[in-house]
Length: 214
Length: 214
Image (cartoon, rainbow over all chains, first blue to last red; front, top):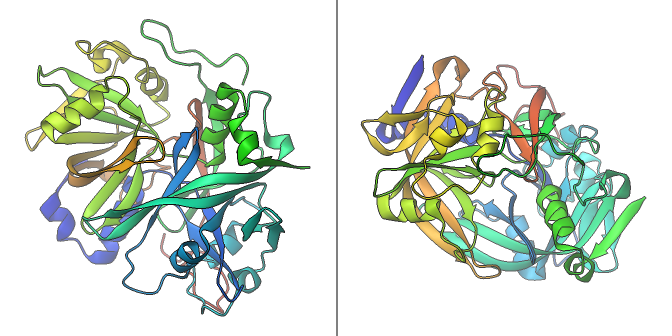
């Protein structure tokens, strides 16, 4: 049976029920640790699951920052330093990554608190997560205020990448499943995606077919 | 071995290689069919994999629309009508969904061309995909021009939802895996996520633990 909800039904829901429902109906998400550093040089880690591909040329990613109604260490660091990292979470350390979503004090490093290792590159001021096989270094590019709920859409330009080279196929495709990268539903459910198929570029009037050289 | 790329390395890549690489490093994505309707009442379907949760109260989702350097039927319909739908893709019809990414003419309905069924609700002008167990009806809320590459971040407010009620857990969590919802990597690789674990809300100084009532 198909259950029908109107906007009024959604707004009348018990708040935790609505939060769980609305966080899952949007589908599976990526799950990344965002590394930044404070002006006191304390490395900071936050868990984000709204990272969106915006474009390849130039290489741009975006994500949603929640309203600034409370101090947001990640936002403060990104604004102060202009740089941050995004590190794919794998099945090997998703429990530590989840723990990084806890609210630690601003003088405490989440790296130490959750048992992950900061990795520094001479070319980028923000810390990477050593345990991650896919690490991106970004520079703040622009930000957009979402008027409807006071969130901020942050756009970053990728200026450095550190990728386990065994994961990069000859055509450039990064084999997320070989890297054991996780996906997430809602705020708490972690998944390991299993490959169904790689499909060829779709054209009108042609049968859908598997990609020849995956 | 960790392969190191600078921004200059990325910009010097062969364009298809860069497109594949940058579309996969951002991690697993959701995969949804966007339904809209033209002023001639032709139902339109497009495949989108940048749908992002923005907030639950009010219920908001966003996605990236590519630059308007060519006619974009989906954008035109959303602007003209103010409404669109998002329909989760499942393992049962992901091949038809992929085929909807082909460039059909503006007088041709992708529904017919790929063999999916439009479903209409009296409360919402845009067509849903009958085969999908999770259907969201949205109203255009705001749009943001991403200056760095001329894409548009479109924000919609959820005004109606049609969800298979067997997928909604007592706490509101939608069981995407029970609905056989797919995830996608890059532009062509379809995945079926397998549940690893649901983790409890993280607090400093507490062990990460499984959720008691998933």
